Image (cartoon, rainbow, N blue to C red; front, side, top):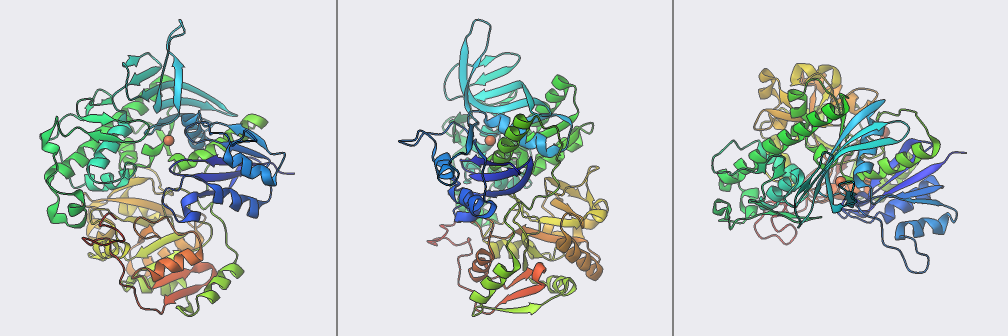
Length: 586
Ligand SMILES: [Fe+2]
């Protein structure tokens, strides 16, 4: 009889993970099921597990704090729901151990036997720590930490930096409590200044490639901490630039103006984005170096929200060539549901089995009969045709956007060929065209997927592969002109390498595209429209088709191409001035 542990992470990346006898078998983020971006309360995820996987022996809640209790039964809402179906379910609450859960996710997925994990995020659990032998304590939000990790479940924290809104800075060999800003808070402040959400760091990262060093930008950091003069921190959420003290940052226009129109972007904005990217990745590289020195271990795993910064991830590989680096693809808060469930499994069973990440497609597999039923329900808006991968490759090479829908959805924020929109990377106008169709800002780059065996010919991979799209790498100089639609302004590309074992159909399609064009790379962006979560079901996928100017979805498992027969809607492109739908805030 197998033992199933449900990890539940409430928070801005609300998620659930189901671990069966130590093996991750299901993961989803609530936004995929509810359609509400950043949905924090994973009730639908729990119901999906109950309905599909039938048994929950233990529930582990995580997040960033222990959860409030419901009246009458004294248990949190998620446990209360699960207990309705499984009265004897065991419970563990780990919300007060946010960074430990990040570390556990990265360590258990890394495949390392022993590792040092570096966690970098905005604000984790609010914790009190003893700072001396007299019992003096200080409290703050977890910000950065270093963990030495061993099987079955030994996690020794050797360094932790905290952030707090008020108080006096206290530094010991093991702790750094600071009322200024931690690394991610500085990044958040810049993202907010640029008109993005606090957790839309990816947009700042995309813009950074347009900027350069400028003397108009003051020091963003003093030592390893964000400048207290420049940044006004707010924990747990938020962080701002003090424009009163730094008048060069007084904005003369709404940032949404340059989000829509490149000609309105000024130097201060792009150079600030460049500087925060440059400085923050340098600080994190310093932390990695510190982690290696403190632990004597060069197998390093990265976790926490900053771990998704694929420009920084590539930078570490370049400046720290002696490390064996694992970048956890589900390193944002959602992934802690996995770490929590695995941590409890390994602790309970003293299990020392190493289970490296070999797949990312942890969403629900929809049976072919169910897909067929959805197609039947939509038969008045689509036609179906049998199609070989070769013909799909031709369709893409003829400059058609084709979405792909297959298998379980990708865990984490990257679309990796099961819920992706595909296009021809050779088209010089491809980036602008797809940005317009998706309603994204003009400065955001698109990713490319390359056949693994061809990766080194097209990209400087720094001696590795990138199956989970965790690195923005340099495009080989003489290839830049061949794949303009996926080459960013600084001649980098956020790249996914794929082999047959990782994704048979996707690999097969790119192989056909390569035979046809001589280019083993395909343009890959997430199957959604701006501001919406990645599509989960086939009906979601069709609704996205109807709501956009896309015409095709390929279903490789059914060998079928869907063609939309209804007219394109006059949908908001996300570039409009006054639209009620997007308010120009794509
Ligand atoms: Fe976090």
